[in-house]
Length: 265
Image (spheres, rainbow, N blue to C red):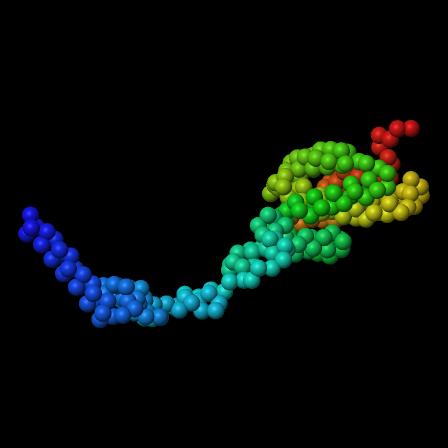
């Protein structure tokens, strides 16, 4: 018993001597086996220096002995940056991915506004409905401001007329055309009629001036649409046969712009 107590106290005294020597040898250090790393050294002393990398100011990551991978990070802009993909290289604009290309809309609109120029037969290879929808909405809005809410008639006449023109063109031509391009051509060629609808806000079209303007817009729209259809389908010998049903369709739109259809009297 006495020996066990002596051994216990002896071991305690030896441990105390050990910790005492450690504390005496290095004052200010809590434990001998723990040594704080100097400032600027790595956490693992055995880490390889070849893996130490530097991050550049523009997002360029480079390593010693390895090729650099660089890229520019675009700064955050205003709310309009949500409609583009300027921060991604090789990506088209977001509106173009949605089928809205203002360059194509402008080119096709200028073709309609200048019907006497030569039309490229490949003008409708990249057909779209963004421009036609814009023109139809503007036409209905102008008629609404003039006291003629005709949205239902506009969509009904446009749908029935487009289906009829599509059927006739595929029966008359050998090449054929799809309904998407038919609607695109008819919608773009509605642009002169949109101008008449804008005039109806300021001038009453139920008179001689309105009749003359409506007839001129019908002829303009019919000439432009028939020119594009003839150029695309190569039907130059059937120009009048194409223009006749197209003129009837635009005549319905002119009646909607002159008269208040369905008005209570």
